Image (cartoon, rainbow, N blue to C red; front, side, top):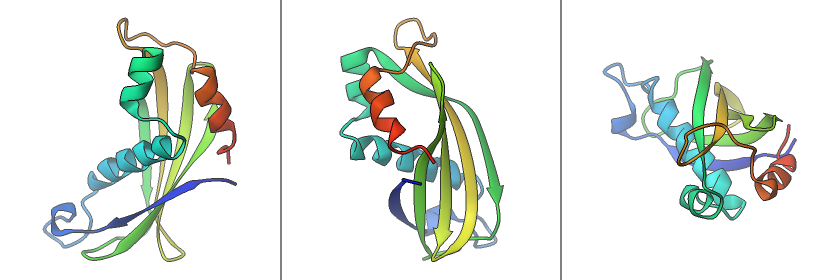
Length: 135
């Protein structure tokens, strides 16, 4: 399995009144991980729009929470491609504190034409790069 990792430090702004990471904070952490995954491959979201006329839109997200994360924790977010179709792909993002699994997220993204906002095939170069990150 090949994945891309980033570290995420937990700040007050990420926590709820009980002092644990607020469930919706994982959505923004996941977005950061997906963006950094693309950067690792040499792309930015704005480049995909400019060069290929495409965007990746979230179609579905599911998250399983296994353990609470708290203020000052340092989490490792691992991002990989779980599967690819012609116009969509599924990413798996796992959050760890050390070796302990904190949360497991699956995100289905659809490649759309920026003007029509209708599904289009993944750009060939992106598809070729994603293959190296399939679990």
